[in-house]
Image (spheres, rainbow, N blue to C red):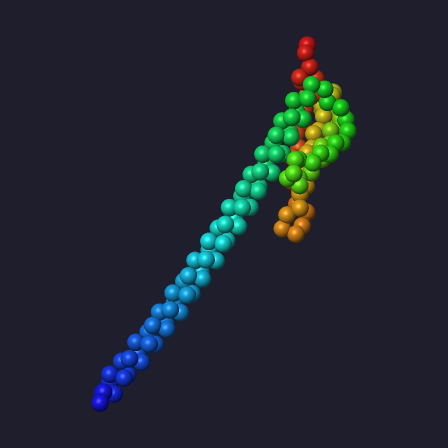
Length: 137
């Protein structure tokens, strides 16, 4: 016959194994959740970088136009689902520090809109430019 002490030790071994598996399971779950969140964050950062590059490119293209004309335009960027709305308007009554009226100054605003995460997202960039900046003298 086996001694009662030996049976008790086998019971503790089983309990220790169950507890070890439970601790390992919780640690593994936490690790998987952390990896998933890191992946979501990396995806969001990549998306933000893509939008920033598209807006930067659109602004560079608009600023370098030889002649600025007031108006609004809207384009779809390839198959990305991003819509760019460009608004160019003449700034009236803009003065410098000396109180002199600045003429032919334009405000350029580019708005990017896209659908992500179940809602419409939007980013806007804006700058000013002298109308005759890129015209030959």
